[in-house]
Structure formats: C-alpha cells, structure tokens
Image 1 (tube, rainbow, N blue to C red):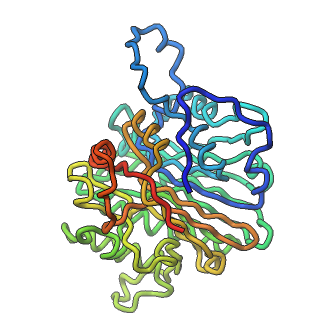
Image 2 (cartoon, rainbow, N blue to C red; image 1 turned 180 degrees about the horizontal axis):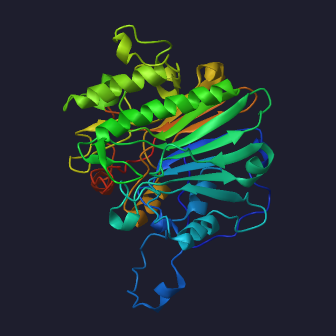
Image 3 (cartoon, rainbow, N blue to C red; image 1 turned 45 degrees about the horizontal axis):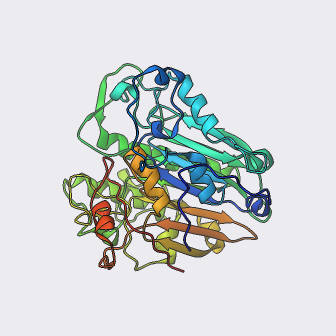
Length: 405
C-alpha cells in the first residue's frame, strides 16, 4: 500500500465522510519520537514582523500534524515523544491544540494532552525544552471511551501520559501508556525536591523500571489491561541490535536484564539472589517480536555513524498477556513514505518508529516502521541514496517506502 505525499497547496477534500467514522470501534495507536514539536506549530504573530527570506519555489510544505493524521487515515491516538516544549510556555501548548483540530467539518477532530518536565534540577538544558510527551486523541474516541488522561506521580521529567479507557466492547478497560523512557548514562541524577545528587542516570533508569512495573501492577489489580507504547530506550535481545547488541559499558546489560525480568518474564527470576529478586514479572507481549520472532528490524540509527552501520530496535509496543489472543496481524513498513520525508525535512528529524495497535471485534493490529538489516537498496535512485544516508540530529533515518503484507 502506498500513500501519496501531501500537495504543496491545500486541496479541497471531498465531503464523502471521514474514514474514522467507520472505525469507531477500532483503537489505532501511532507512536512517533518527533525530537521537537516546534516545526509542527504555527509561528507566533511576532514572527511575521521579522525579516523574511524568500523561500525557494521547490521548498517542501511546512510540517503539519493534520496532514500526518490525514495521511494515516485518522488514527485513534498519536503518541509523540520528545516534544521539547518549555513547561512555562502556555502559547506552545495552545498552538499544539490548534494544530490538531479539524480544519473542515467532515474531518475528525482531535484533542491534545501533554506532560512536560516540572523537575528544575534534572530537566534544565536547552531553555528547559527537553523531554516531554504528547498524546493526540481523536475526539469521538475521547468522548465515548476515555475516562481520563493523567500523569504519574513518580515522574517529573515529562516522560509518561496514561490514557485510561472504559470497557471497549469485548475488550477490558485499558491503561495505555505513552512513554519516553530514561536513557541510562553516568550523568548525575538529583533529588527533584532539593537538587542533591542521589545517583546516576543509570540508577534512575532502573528505578523508573521499578516504579512503572508497580504502576502497572496497581492498574491490573483495578481491572485494567496494559499497553506500553513509545520509545522504551532498550534493545531486548541480540536480534534487536546491529551489528551486535550494546554490551559496553556492562551497565547496559544490567538495564536489559532488569527490563526483561520486570516486564517480559512471567515469574520471578530464579537466578537472582533472594535479597535482589524482582517482584513477579508482568509477562507482557512484545507485539512485533511475538508475530515476527526471527525478523531483524531496527528503529534507531546513531547520528554519529553511517546509515545502517549501527542500529537498534528500541521503540515498541508491549501489551498485557491477556491481550495476546487479540494480536492477529502485523504489517511492517520498511521505510518512510515521501510525504513523511517532507515532514522530516521541515523538522530535521524523521519517525523513529510508527506502531499501531488496533482493537476491533477482538482483533489487535500492530503496524511498525522498520528498516531491515538485509534489505536490498540497489533499486534506490541517487537522490534516495543521499537522503537515506543522512541520519538526522536525533538518529532517525529516511528510507524509501516498502510494505510487507
């Protein structure tokens, strides 16, 4: 399946009704690490008083969230990570809300929720425009099925938003997490209350694993099934890293084992000492790996390496094991479409991963965007080769479109 890129000029859409209406009982989630939402927001009125540089006639159109939603058939939810908005900048929040609203009456409307950093000791750089997640939810679903969208009490870095739903036909209540997980480093982690150093970002990463696992347990006790979606900042197994899994420094292996024991294992890890044993694992399903156990697919490309030289699968969607029966179909798109490149070129980044989980008549549909290590790129034009080899600032890469059925 291919989708034509958006035209440079807005075209009049037919009034034949929107595609979302026929999928009101379907839950579709797209997760996208945007590495900065600013290119998608309408500039403030003051920007029009500054000297303007005449744009080239062949310049791509400005990035548009509405165009993105339209091209992807109006998904139920669009989860954004690393929105990088100053928490005191209310105008940017309003601009985001405006950017996702329906432009014409027959298009589905959306509402925007954000979680931005409130930690003044651990989220200070770049004018406090760091981290942050945004959940864009289609309004018809929001009104009919969502009880609330909330933050978590134990994070102040703007990394989590939880959408709690009512029962959806044969599916139970869902707690759907939009996640931008901690990246473990040797940098200090400070107590958010007083700024005292209490460990490293490595320590904080594993603490967040513990707190997230506990949050999921509490939700399960209240009758929720869990969906964890987004940038989890972990590569699970050797198949998820190219040319190999990251093992140095050794602490990355500790993060991986901790993640596996807490979220993927179905019981307590017997190999651990009693004093360090984890609470029983959540036994979640990695939807991509569940349906493609031997497929090599990657979602992150370091900006300091040549394209394809090093890559990892760190973005994923995990679901509670009780939802396993609903996972029926998966489609993998090997590359971004031309239209996505236009968005990317405006915002100096590209989608690290697009994943969909849909529930309709007890069917979960999971769609990811990956590049495979053994892909044949000989068919690319010189222009496509040039684009493909340019990893952007956040490590995302642009590649031509391909769909597996």
